[in-house]
Image (cartoon, rainbow, N blue to C red; front, side):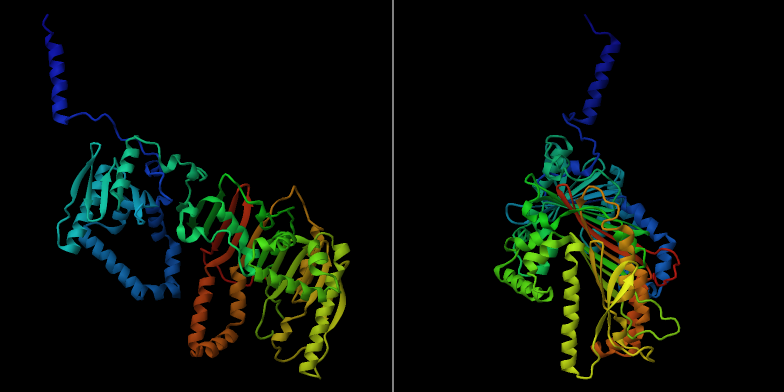
Length: 596
């Protein structure tokens, strides 16, 4: 039986297509939802970014950039060598590549890219770049631009060697291997790493970063400028430093918790985002299957929340530092965190402090009564209406110590305060027999007894010196001991403490947050108030002229005019330790005024 003419024509058509296209591939490229799905899981870390091109164009076209460039700092940059070199280099790129540098950036890195790295068996470093060009046509444009740039810079044609891996071709030039994978450009300094990437692209293996249990802790949130992730225990120079004992007690109290968290950390991730409202940097240490080592529990205590710290910030602070530690437990187990000579210094320090607390043993009787939060706050001095201000004008500072029960254990701090004043009086008399004695005078703030030191200074001097910045004071309020350099600041803190009571609105205790806060406007204000004094100090210390010193300080002042505030927080969250940094920016034509 002869096949019908129609069926014979169909077979001839199919055969002709096969001859024209060549042999059909048994596999096809997979759709790339995330570049992490095509990065081999063997990398020890990688960085990724999305939509950098639109962000860059938006920044370059923004009126905020114009305001920055119109400032004296901006004008100095535009007239400087760095800017002229930047313009020159961009011009060379455009001339040699035949394309606008911004367009080239958009096609190469502006949409999405991933940069990963791993250590090779030979001890070197292998690096992989994956970037989404958008289409094969865009890749061809990028290739053409680089070929032109290569020839312009070397005088040689852009010629590559051809290779093949499982029917997929890739190329080599020098120490660089690269290939186009359906709109994704893969480039690396390792042939093997590129072949592994090609296997992932064709779904021949599932061993990718996207499927790796080590990188599974990362958030699925895509709204970030740049995100970097690394397995810190695979970094040879750092791994041996994690969790080691320190020889400085203060350094240990501040940092041993995070050092210990790094010791059991399977993944460290950092996320950077920015806008004209601020710059945000977040760092997270994800614990491995062992979780947090309980010996580091003193560095991440649980405390009840309180409105006190939020309320005192509304009183116009220059800055504040809040540290939460179980100091008694840390001290008790200091041998686990400190070198032997450092633990010995703690014993000496304890003996010295015991003298101030009326004979109470500091380590055994005072330390166990401390709460888990200690704070430092700073505030600019109030304006002296109709009177000259001290020169220099120094911000007031106060130390806030929380106690477990201030009614029982607040008294030793009052004794220690009076003892300190007595020792200072003896020291002053030894230096100057005619020096006035300092007197501790009780003074009420509401129902709270405060203790204010009268320094014996003349009232209303024509040129008040630095000593007029101080009126040392102490108060025990609620479960807080407040020791301040000025009575005005201690009074404000007592008022806020009395409003919130011993703990304010409390909830179930949660992991406490360490916090550093600086108000940029208040810092600019105190800098302006002391401009002449600081400039004179620069003249003495650096040997520059007074005008040069003032110009240097003016640069700092102008930088602060763009800064709203700086905030740093660190805390534990389940089996992760987190660090957050936020720099608030002033984007409008804001007039810098004192925040207080």
